[in-house]
Image (cartoon, helix red, strand yellow):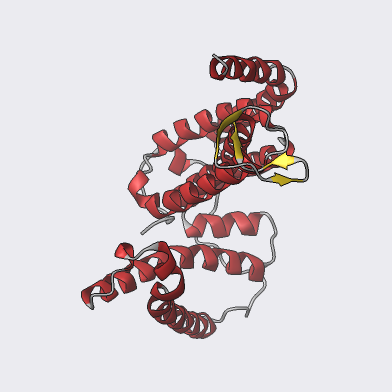
Length: 285
């Protein structure tokens, strides 16, 4: 299954969930703060830090293969759109024609648009990697204990955790149904994109939706039979405590966060400008 907690004996798995939640929060804040194309410089620093955590946590890439495929499609879309439509683009890489729209030639794919598309992709990737690290190294019981310690409403935390639990089931059900359809000579992987868009997904999405509705009804019966909502303070299976390694990780995350902001407003602008000028000079020969 993809995007699901995997039990391992690593220091990342042993960290307090609050520590990993801080990493996710920092990634979200940086993605919102950084709005200029030169911000890709500090984002690369954050990405390097996250990949180190990924490596230490021992997360296998095949477990998130579907997520990676979806991300690649999204990144390609942003790069193509920004490459042709970015209004600050002045260095064409190639052209498929000349079409004027609001004084912008949208037939030219520009270097500046390419870099801006990469910047947007980096913002998304920073948040997604932090989310994957949090979800795949934190058990549902620890997430529940974290939500309880943060005094979140029980109904809200249960809905959130149930959604996280259902996410890998959706991927698995989709994969199982697709394999079952292949046995009936209905292979969507061999269809072209037009046929796939109008025909392929109906025989797969219909049983998938029905299956999810059935699982939802089973979950409702299950939680009601266990007295869901009978008490406002349910018993927690795990008691969480911050340890020295959590405080050390807190400090490291805060330092990376502060350093990224410092680099963004001091080092990144001139460095990015020099790099862009260098690329322009190469393209102009």
